Each structure stands twice: as structure tokens, then as C-alpha cells.
Length: 113
Image (cartoon, rainbow, N blue to C red):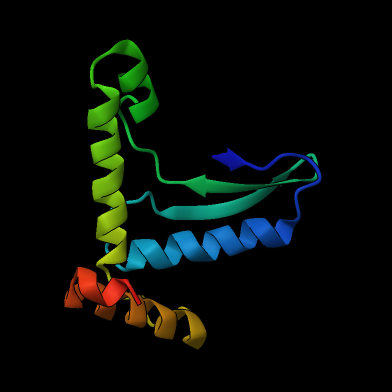
């Protein structure tokens, strides 16, 4: 579960829930949202449990180098950017996402403008 700090708007948490669900629906490897909770007035997101060590733990123990951890994060970010936005996103977000994806398909010279 991800529990937000006291005083953080529940609207921010609900926005994150929508974004995680959209990214998951698009096929990016992120935990599924199982639900939402409120504990002591704090908003929380119940996420699918993924077994195993965190990337932070692996890098702190030396199981992976910081360069390897960075490469893993970069690969995840690239998979996110290469994925078309799912239809449940608001229209303006889908249009923006499609424009970004089109520029990436065109190559580096298209991103300079």
C-alpha cells in the first residue's frame, strides 16, 4: 500500500490512481491498483504485491550497480513513452501522448523542434 502523508489532498491521490490504472491498462509493467483506502484521514492506494527486493535495495547491497539500476529505470521510462495512451485518458492527454509518440517514431531530428 502507498499511504500519502497527512495533509496531502485526496484529489492528488485519486489522480495518481487514474494514472497508474491507465499506465497498467496500456501494458506497462506496473503493479495493478486493487483499491483505495483512508487511514487516519490519509489517502492510500492498495497495489498489487510484487515479491522480491526493490531496485533501491539491490543497488544499496551491490547486487546491481547504479549504472545498471539507471538502465533499468531508463528502459521502463522508454517502454512508457513508446506506449500509446489508453482510451480512458482524457482527450487532451491522449492527443499529447500521440504527438510525443509520433515525434519519437520520426527520430532525433523531429525532437529538436
